[in-house]
Image (cartoon, rainbow, N blue to C red; front, side, top):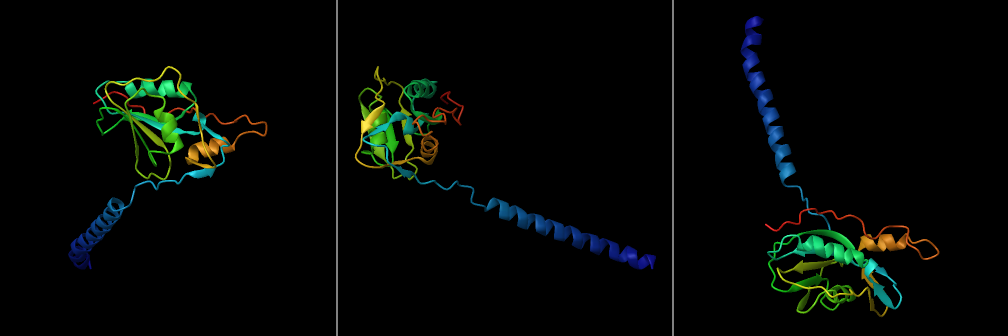
Length: 192
């Protein structure tokens, strides 16, 4: 009996280890092939009256130039005029002029953010469905002294889900109960 156990012990152990190795390879392959991209959230149509105000616009500030800290400084300036800053960080894209990117170049949120900077300013649209506005900063740029905080609009405007949610939580007397200037999610501002 002992001889039979000793003879079967090695092949059974090898088969068990082979099964564990096979399962590990299968599990690893499943983990590598998982789609980890976040689905883009569509904007929410909101009636903002006759004008779109800065507290309803979500902005990402990106440093696309050589000057370190430009995104952080611009973030503070836009926050002080009521803009909702989603994040600030470095951009992979180098620019020579302030570049404002949104869903479409002629969207009201893109136009309003563009008015905060001295010329030359380039506006671009890339069809993004969330309507967050990206500000890509060059090495040298200037901001206007009094940043505009509203722009006239006709009809409803498609707003990012985050600013639509904070404006939907307004109390009945018209004051907002949610802070529209929350802390950013990105923290790196030094240029590479």
